[in-house]
Image 1 (cartoon, rainbow, N blue to C red):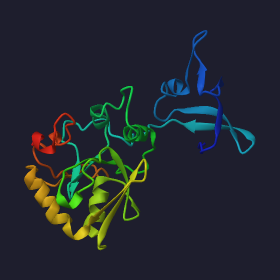
Image 2: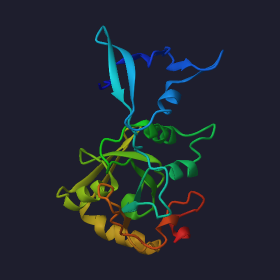
Image 3: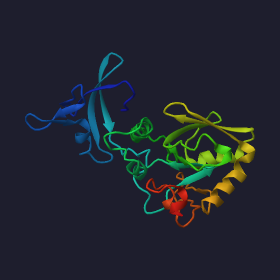
Image 4: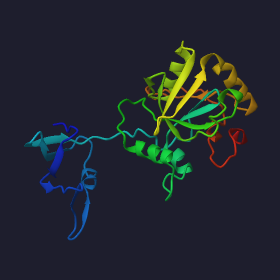
Length: 246
């Protein structure tokens, strides 16, 4: 059987599930339903009683492993990034959130939005959350240099699925402008397409960045890595600028 959005889980293997998603544990104690699901192994099944479309039905549901949309680590490799006219994009990861103090008591709306992306489903193996990490100031991006920690949703009305996808759209773009759309508040950044290449080159030279991008094709078995030797230092929040880490 398959669960669908809107299904209400009433019980699992005969264990009643309360409105708050918890089940009985020891006397006087309750735990999340996931605590029980996590005792199962890949390929096991659980019998669920659910309420769907005004009907009570029972399903045998296979247990699987959920792949995270947000990477937990980089396996000691440099993080991915892409510089576009001074805008520095990267892939959202747990190290990025940790460096942003995402679990502290007070965080910005932008970081709160990124934190919520951890719970989003992974639709394709190559999917990533692309983040505008910082902007390296240049005369062509004046007014945008304070932007940081923004989730890139679209470029020229195309949904962005990964850094590789973002670079592909930019490389194939034939329009006069690049129109970036960000979450959580719908902020817009517009850059002139014809100036991207030389502005990116000037920014990289000024900040001693050897390559304008480090990318991995997550859809393949082996990482296709184009990197500089010390690219992992590019996003240190403790550094005043990108140049300090290179």
